[in-house]
Image 1 (cartoon, rainbow, N blue to C red):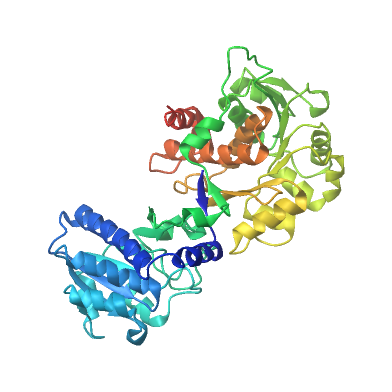
Image 2: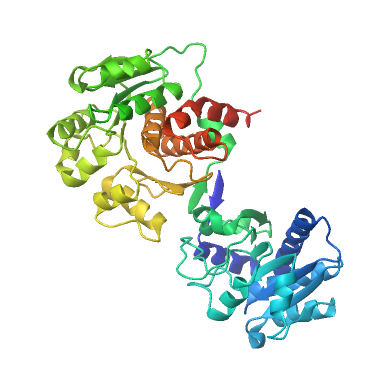
Length: 481
């Protein structure tokens, strides 16, 4: 797992490291990493490094100092470097001196437009992790002229470092170089950050436990349950699916199919469209009512069941079975309108809730807002459940405060029925006995990979995402020895 640390934790760790490090050493190490990434970007975009033009957009403080030192290193490689100083009186003195001594130049206010227009690369050194709010007018005016690739120092300026929120003018980086630890912005708003390079400055021992985690492909592969020689269909997990209606038969087909594709040992479907499910998935054991379904080791409930009395009774029955439950779609709306349905739940029984933003607002009374991590963490504690908040960056919070982030691979999953597929995958992993927080995180990862495979660069459908689940599993399995 990759750790993500909030800016408060990073600053505290940096203070401890700085106390035992020679003055300026960390900045030069960080700047060297920026210069290396800048040189690679020049080579990738122009085919050369020497003789190319780089413009530094420099703010006050250490972030600007990193950019200035990086510019000095690039000068020594034959790059023409010029700096736009947004606040000349507060520019980092040693970094500025290093740039000038290496042959870089400081642009007068009237000079920067032509340099920006002819730049091969622009380095954003405006603000760092201490800044909040959008770009100021002078910085925004500079970046409005930028057409070249942008390399951000630590994070794109104008983007909130802890929430990824954008509330006004902000930089959209092609690439970002960060130091010591990844910050929340790098996973919460990847579109603004571009690809992220982490430069090791020795901060690791000072960081402590991460505030967020991101699963790598190897983590997903290691967590995914595989049958052993002694396993049978029951020991691999029996997933119950209570979904669908005459109005929404597809919800049942997609949810049950996802549990099948996710290699549940057995899938039981219970609902009014049993015949439709059998036609699509003959391996599913289907019955017309949840009240006469056989035993399951987990239940998926909600997609397409309706929000009236029948839906309430189905949800209450499932919650009373004493097994892990993934509640999605209509089940979340029922819970929001009639919270007493939770009285049927044994408090020790795991519950996973999978809302999108609108369902989250119905459930909690407020939208997630810009600080989605805090919102989902508080919801998990409030409902004593794992809460998977869908979005461009999906967040999974456990009642104990753990939060996992899954960065989207495009917007292909924003399509009708996609959530039904996710709930089916989650239910299969719950039936196999995975920790509910990990089960939801692993399901989100495989779901996102299936969406990427199904899309192939063009819009896709939930049925195609479902069909791509085995290919997504093969892809993550390839990361294991």
